[in-house]
Length: 163
Image (cartoon, rainbow, N blue to C red; front, side, top):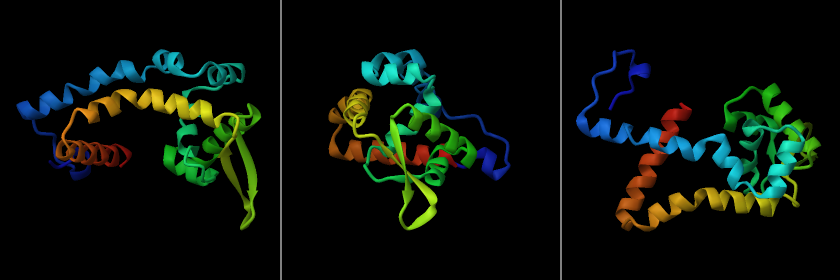
């Protein structure tokens, strides 16, 4: 289905099947609300976030660091679709809270590498696993073919949203 914004064509009325799918999206909103997210956060991580005035924008950086591969501030900016100064501000606040660590890139001294502080890694892993449980349970109920289709569709949607 063409994307109306990209093509410049006026949007067409959605089909009944498309309405059914689109109507599911708002049902996910309560899962992503700030209050629900804070409730699921391990207490030590929540306390550190609150003590240092960190918000969901700061928290959005953290899952990107779970892979254990340090990222540059520029890479973080790209992944979050924010400006370099904004990414730098987010990383700085997380660093002051002790949740992330910054280090000079040995290959390029002008770049800063950002990694998750090891004390916070298990807390973030627990939090991400807890947040992912409903999705994993839903996937468990699907056949391998349905799972592959769901993942392909979700991946395509993410690509469209990130545009």
